[in-house]
Image (tube, rainbow, N blue to C red):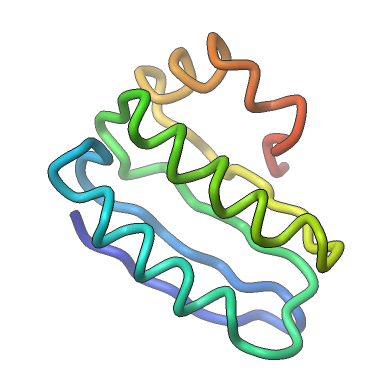
Length: 102
C-alpha cells in the first residue's frame, strides 16, 4: 500500500494505491490520522483510482476516519473508485455518509 497526499486550498487530497485489507489497515489508519490532524482542512478527498482491492477492514478504516472528522464538521469524499472497490463501497452503504466526488 502506498499513500500520496497534497493540500489544495482547504482540502486534503489523499491517494491510496494498492490493496486496503487487514495486512495494511494499521498503517493506513495511522497515516490518515496523522494527515487529518493538520490544521485548516475543511474536507478530505480520498482518491481511490489506484486502489485495486478493499475488504471490510478497509470499510472500517474509512468509518473510523469519518467518526474522527464528523465532530469537526469535515466531510469525506471518495474520488474515482475502481470497479471492484466501487462494488464493495456500494454494498456497504458508505456512499450515504461519504459521497463520490465529481
